[in-house]
Amino acid sequence: ALAQVGDAYVSGASGPDAFDCSGLPSMAWAQAGVALPRSSGAQLAGGGTPVSMSDLQPGDLVFYYSPVSHVALYIGGGQIVHAANPGTGVADAGVTSMPVSGAVRPG
Image (tube, rainbow, N blue to C red; front, side, top):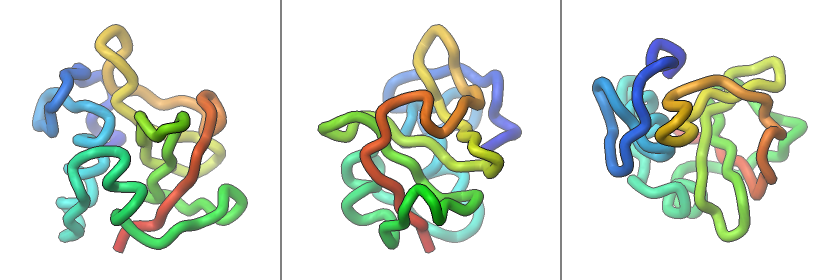
């Protein structure tokens, strides 16, 4: 996913040159042989085992807002990588840069 930093944000895209928020983790985890549901809400509900924010590990999915409308990949050190929006594209940010609603560990 970090290799995608700078790529474009496009609604409904899942690579290889553009992504939406749920398409980025879907592509990253698919490369590791793990299939994820396509939407952020479905990834929260069925994308893995719930984990607390204090137990995050790189690769965990972090979900934002209520109802859930955004997902990012935790990369460690209090940072995420995500397909932010059309103006920003794929970028890194602080894990608490948006209101967190939960996290799961795929696999």
